[in-house]
Length: 403
Image 1 (cartoon, rainbow, N blue to C red):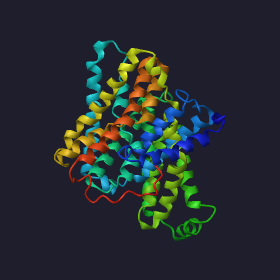
Image 2: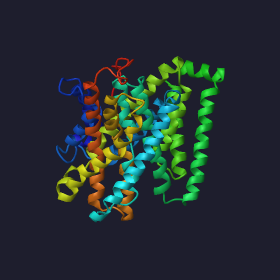
Image 3: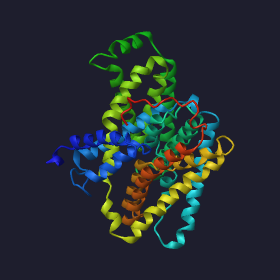
């Protein structure tokens, strides 16, 4: 039975998805969309070829961590600092305000919509957008810098907020103190990675770069595991440790000398781990739950509208920095929800009794729908726009990228 061979099934989809994306009808659809949709098809809700249990459930979490690690590696603060980062921070704070106001307006409906939903509604899935940005050659453009900065704050801000607000291990003040210590360690590591380059260490890494030991790659993965361990010991989500590890490795490997190393890490994370996250997300989605109750079904488009409203409305802040026809693609791309954070918020709300099962499932369904709809809409809007800052100086997409 194929259910006994989840790796085969996942990578069958992982190969089929980019092939479908190369066809004429699928050319404007991000590869991750095909991966998630095909994951739903092979999952227990449709063909029942594989279930989100045991090894596959574990690897889905590992894949999420790897995607966040790669997202951290892509952050070049020299590229997004200044105006892009300031607008990203202001836009996220505006999203928090919009989401809070929307939840207050919905209180008379009688739905159980606790304040913790603000964290979920104000997210942006940087790990989901990253393949689209890279494959489209947008990272080096002004549009790409603005979106990367907005997505960075839209991922990191909710991760920190969720770690502080949803943790039951320590008090709020203890969490603030531990967060300060953790961020201090990360800042120190970033500084060391940028400035401390002992000749003997560099020579050792160079000698083992192409050997069977792959020491530089193993060191990067050890750093990833270390920061995940520390973040969880401090009561935070694994995602913040993975993202921090990616930033450290990205700074240390910046420049032409680190190109071979970055390609190797890229191949490991996107070639092996990432398919388990994106395909596994589709496999784990409870599609049948949406059809069991009309209220749950109606909540999905309602939550999707809230995602777009909360993260899309603040693009008015960019009206002086980007052409008008870039604002709608930026709004749609920024509205891609962070599945990992949404799942965490929904799970905590369900366990604490603040969310009922219908609302929790609808929230996850809307986040998944945002992953399917918003990147596709953003890509279509960019393709229809005239020559803009989103396209200017954009290098050709790198064909070797597996996602």
